[in-house]
Image 1: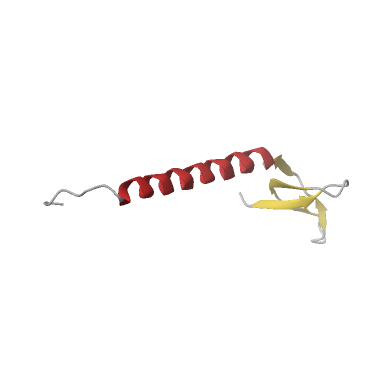
Image 2: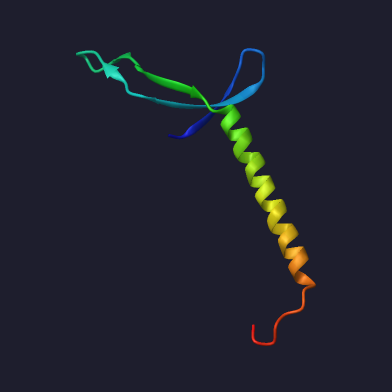
Length: 74
């Protein structure tokens, strides 16, 4: 499901996922839009924090390995 960034009435932005369909009248015009909207703001914040932590660990690992002596056979 694609995420969509929307603006709240108070001016703040947040992320949602929406899934639904368009029901049409006999003449083909849209008559309703049944579906589900899920607020995924917290999940996106957690994912961003996870990605920052992974990047920090990789950087730390590369830094700590850069000065380490290597075995002659590696």
